[in-house]
Length: 145
Image (cartoon, rainbow, N blue to C red; front, side, top):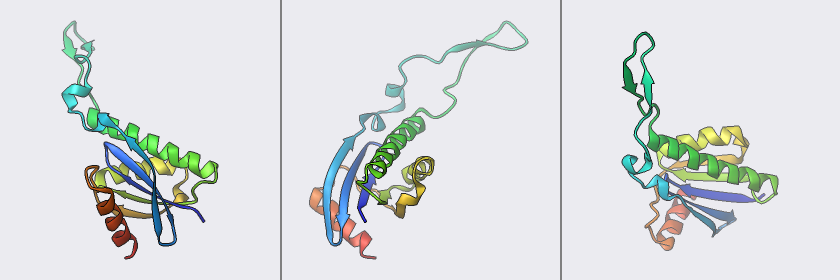
């Protein structure tokens, strides 16, 4: 049985293989748009619309939160990567370590692909700036419980 660990937040992800007591880093994915401010993500002013029963024009609102949309795109990218790994026989089971908000987005995206892969969810944010040694120490602590 091949297990992976996905450590992620809205701006980066790190995949690890986990066999027995051994955890090894696999691939890191950087998502810089997850770190950008909303005004930097918006490239244009909102569109304009005419009111239904008049000739007045109004600016259209952004509707959905741009930041949340970027997080959903990244969560979908990660779920697709897990889907590919499952199809290629690289991973059977997945442990996800992510902050609660992003974990919810990952959960929704995984339901579209292979929800049975996810065997454990850990509600923690292990920031990208944390050293590799500290991340591994935290992972061993989380998984030993």
